[in-house]
Image (cartoon, rainbow, N blue to C red; front, side):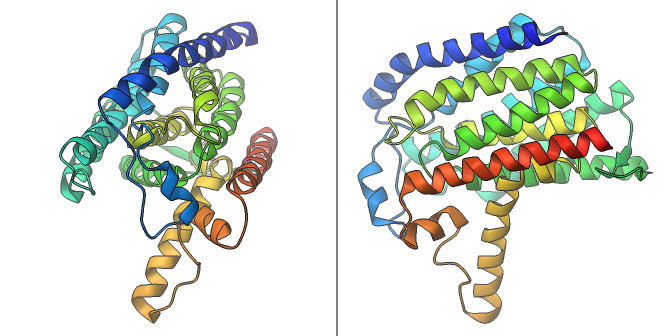
Length: 320
């Protein structure tokens, strides 16, 4: 696997996503699959109500077609598809219920948990059949330790954490599209270095698909990816980190997602224990908006932070 093949994979998924946009956006409008906006959020977001959502379908279809074209079938191949499309399916059902049945919370907590555990379990089974190493390496050091069977518990926790963290990040035009492109871009390079060609092809396909989607998702967004896209991306990035044996490095490369999730945890914990909020609103990107930042300024700042974290992750990988 060389960089030429990777560029072809990225290019094909990008072109497909760009081509799918004019097809899906009018269709979603006709079906009235519009975004419901939080009434307690920034006032500037109220005008986004009704913007087509579930655009994650564009991302998932584009990256899957490109991946199928350039990847070789095998257990790693099926593991990646299971994680991305499986969690994407959970997100799709969540979006569909919210929009069609007018149930603001979508799937119940138990239903969503069942879906997440189901696809996590299937992924763990594939890892077991692959005889995947249960050794964890600490980035930037020579330290490593074998978790044994408890490694599979870590895998489940990673999927739960990653999908929720990525989902929290999807709150502003282009925010998740840009930060996920940077994170998957870093993992493309890592996968090539780690001689994990399928993970490299998959990551490149994701980069192309989200950049193509960004053409329509950048401010002012013509479409949102919804949980269909965010859960699919969250499952995909966790899978790549696991398969490339960079489990802990995901915390660095996906640092923007981690910060977003931590802000929610801190906010909820503080309010329940002290009756006070730490931030004006969580996830933290809304805090900056309510502090007077424009949406574009918040997004580009987070992109820059994502770029720095992706670079830091690559540097840590190199010195490990």
